[in-house]
Length: 80
Image (cartoon, rainbow, N blue to C red; front, side, top):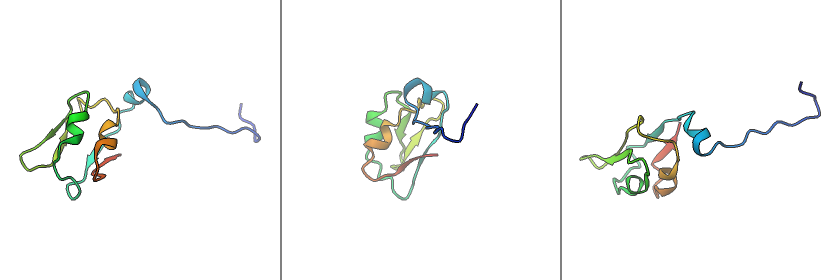
């Protein structure tokens, strides 16, 4: 039962809890310079820099750890 004087906080999910809710990572073609930093840090090896120098994410292999977001210096990756 909820009361008016209670506060419910929703904390960001991490690890296995977050992986169960798979949110896609979107690559901005305008911002991605194809440096491969995201691919190098991805523990699932779910990111490849294509021949056109744009990161491509295998959404089936992605575990949702979000390390790629921190690795990208151009903010070309976004969680959707």
